[in-house]
Image (cartoon, rainbow, N blue to C red):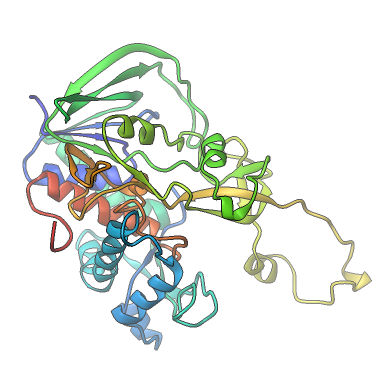
Amino acid sequence: MEFDAIIVGAGLAGLVAAAEIADAGKKVMLLDQEPEASFGGLFLIDSPEQRRMGINDSQELAWQDWLGAAGFDREQDEDHWGKRWAEAYVDFAANEKRTWLAGMGVKFFPVVGWAERGGYLAEGHGNSVPRFHIVWGTGPGIVAPFERRVREHMKKGLIEFRSRRQVDELLTEDGVVMGVSGSILEPSDAERGEASSRQGVDDFCYRAPAVVVTSGGIGGNHELIRRNWPSRLGKAPETMLSGVPEHVDGRMLAITEKAGGRIVNRDRMWHYTEGIKNWNPVWSKHGARNYRGDRLIRVAALHKLLDRKKGPLIAVRLNIVSRKTLGGLQTDLSSRVLDDNGQSVPGLYAAGEVADFGGGGVHGYRSLEETFLGGCLFSGRTAGRAVAGEGGCGSGF
């Protein structure tokens, strides 16, 4: 075969996985259906920035916070691997993560934010101490070193990138995933976040002994969100805004399931309740959050609500903003996709939000803030190194 691995999805997790595989001298085909980011912060534990600000943090406290937020209650089945991934990620965030990123030139803002404070107690939901580390350059500042590594490998011929490739099927032979096939979409000049054409102009078929799915979650697919809406929250809303672009559509979940992969924790998702329609939308149904911090800091000084001198009062309609997927493809600690019997599907791996950043449920029911970009880094790195033959992220895999 011409390639050692095919990666489906060129987001952050896909870039990290591609770079790690190519670092080992293996050839990678990197595919994405879009043409050629978000505010960037990372969850770190007992960092120099925290210590400089007098913040007392520890791996033990962070793990207690994580468990309080996650509320794992399916540990014998759907939460089995997710909880193990969570423990491995907290260890990564407390130890190697910052040094690894700093070695690639990533720098951090000196002030540590305190997002998702919850009830301020470690036994409940939320961070009991500040852990929100903002990267200089925000989202692009996190992506940049991995994009640079990928481009360097492209010059060496170790990575080939093909945009406008929509994967429609994972190719299997006797239960072994051997490649991908799909549609070459017509060229598009759509800007970031805008919907691009899904008109096919040709077909493609690529083969490799390993396929890594890094295609993202379901946040842009409101129909799929409603189909999986948790019954404990009542009826799904008829109207929602989108906190992610339309291409975050969850297509690869069903395609991977058809090839033998197992989807777990379908009913777990994380949406914002205080959404307002974006006045200048980047994508269809683009919503923005309207939370207390904005009202206190960015809009007006505190005053009595009914003070006529501060009027007039303005009513704003709030909507659910679709955002994060907290379930997905179940994977072991080597990012291998598992089947309904708990056995790995040969040749098939997954990383990023499509696997809830490891195990199909690393966050449980609720996530601590800024664990998604870090989850892309950790799960993408784990998948890449596993494909390259360098093991997984913990013992017992």
